[in-house]
Length: 126
Figure 1 (cartoon, helix red, strand yellow):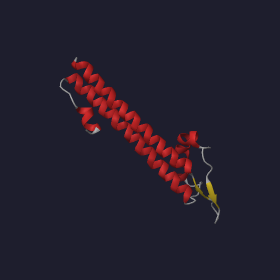
Figure 2 (tube, one colour):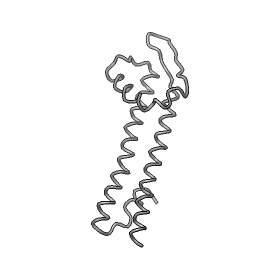
Figure 3 (cartoon, one colour):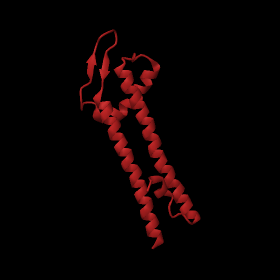
Figure 4 (cartoon, helix red, strand yellow):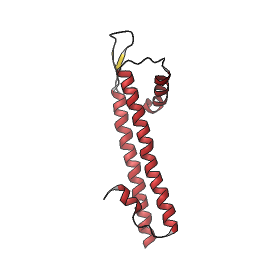
């Protein structure tokens, strides 16, 4: 059974429709936030890897937003830095670890939303 089906099962009254819609919105919001974060992390990873200029506005925005979310992982692995030209290229394994961590966290939160919805449905049926 897919998660989307589990969210919408057992809806019969108007009150359940409102709760079901809120649960579905919360579930999709979690994955929307995860998608935005993962895209930003991927941009950061490739900008650092390809030695993008940190003075570029786009790079500054990406680095600024992702910095906050990467703080817990900053000292986990040192970045591998090479300086072949003017700008140093960096391979940041901590960014990849953060991507995996936040994906697992979002999955856990989404599962909690589905489980809490199914438990509230079972309690209403009793």
